Image (tube, rainbow, N blue to C red):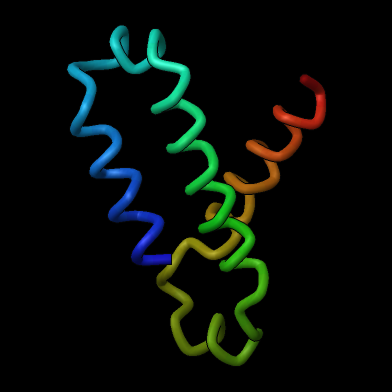
Length: 75
């Protein structure tokens, strides 16, 4: 998950603002794919770990994956 987060940050550093981001399909695809990776990984984490770290937004992380996946399934 940390590697995917670092990749997202690196990819976003290649564009200057939202307008440029929205015009760059490769960056959009790369960022979206890494959100999927984070979400899928969050979904695979055991309940014991989630209970141990309740301050982490597990549901939101999985929600990002589900939303990204739904978007691509409709395309």
